[in-house]
Length: 116
Image (cartoon, rainbow, N blue to C red):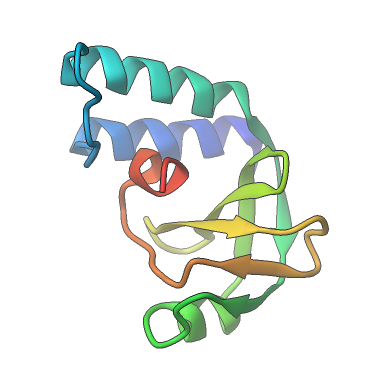
């Protein structure tokens, strides 16, 4: 996967709709534009990662543990993960791409996962 393919994957996800809680004083559209812009600012050249644990392993951890997982955005210790072969995204945490903890949940909503 290339950086431009990662951006297109995120754009498709946004076009399908994002589940966001809109802060008081903003419209959904304004908030979506803000968080989308922040996400795109942190898109990286995709790199393979190893998901080693999850806060809630009973949900999607096994799927991510046994699949090819790619990080496509990175900010501090947060990583936006995607499955190479699916339209799925999850939020991961960690200092190293070889040791990522995920929440345990995933969805087709890139922005929603990034903001989780």
